[in-house]
Length: 58
Image (cartoon, rainbow, N blue to C red; front, side, top):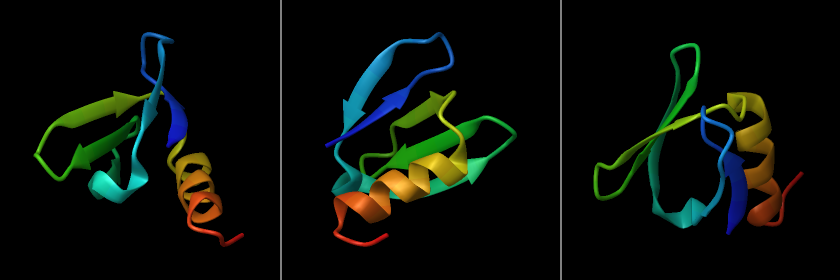
């Protein structure tokens, strides 16, 4: 699980294995496998680094 922050400042934990795709619009939008969309304050580059670290890279 990785920690992210919603645009309202709420911190949540998500399973990066369930991410379908990421967008920067300019906020970060995460679409999960079940098509749920999460609007995040966490910058896209930071989120990618967290995902890579979770998977043992970077």
